Image (tube, rainbow, N blue to C red; front, side, top):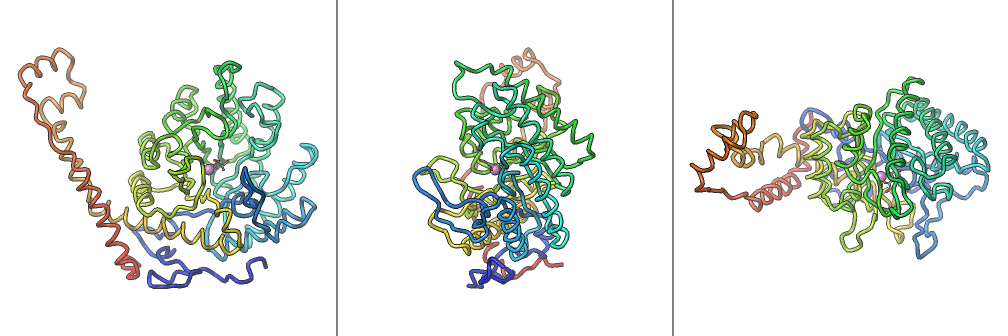
Length: 448
Ligand code: XUL
Ligand code: CO
């Protein structure tokens, strides 16, 4: 046992002062026809929670985890997996996510790496069978090792491309073996530093072929999980190809890959791209491309990918509003791609951080569901676009007009009247729902 001082985390309601209890996340409570657990599908990220030691570019690690003390890669990997499953069970999360290098260190050769991965995949499978915790997604880390200095599927070096392909092949075998619901691509090094040395056309075509080969291999082995691409505009490269939702969708359309992918959207990646998280969610939903999310938050004073645990209730409401409007998660869920701050180095902080994040999204879910149920924001939108429900507006909407007709119309109607957009009133409505939901939280009114 690694977390001796922590028992099972239960829901105790908003009045509870127990730091090891949920105040708002009540897994079995019904919200709009589904339980919170079914809606939110929480996942713990292996890398931030069990691998990371708090090191940053200016300082060494501050987190000395007992499960990372063993020296042989497989011994360490197994201890880590045991700590992980103890954590998942105590927290009551249904899912976890990992990169290949998170579950076991790489070996001296690719052959040895694969042998380690095979052993750990069997080990995790056994643990999953006894715990009922499932794999939301796995991925191959194709950005940390120096071999990926020029990229992986967009590297100028074909040997690196082949190496990366081998890792994805193994990643898909593992996904299949463990019954992963999704397989993720995040192109951390798939971008460029300067156009002066870059053949962008070749790199993009190679990236498209890489994705296509992954789809073909998945079909061959019978892996039926959902492929996800996780956009991010920059960091570590100056410019990443999967910049944001719109860019990634356009790329997939261009190379005829769109039917095989959806997006894994991360809050802090959205803000790095100069968008809100809800913008990214809306763009994806419009194209039926909303797959899963990496929940976290950035810091506007810092401006890089700080991967903080989400505690901003307002953002969680707006994110859950978009997710529910899009019909909720199917294969996806809420993965906490978030790390405790460097000074929060105690093992227990891992629980506090996840409890905070889960409660934040539970509030987001409740408030968003209520906003939708009451159609609280719909009327203003309906009224705002009313001009397209009749007359010339309806003709525009139905494509029954042309520039000549519109010009003739405008000449007769050049006295324009606009109506207020009512932003502040709508924001006040969201605040009212948020505050009311918090007041009612302990009631658990919707329990079936
Ligand atoms: C990096 C990031 C990754 C992906 C998986 O910013 O978000 O951890 O989620 O590779
Ligand atoms: Co992420």
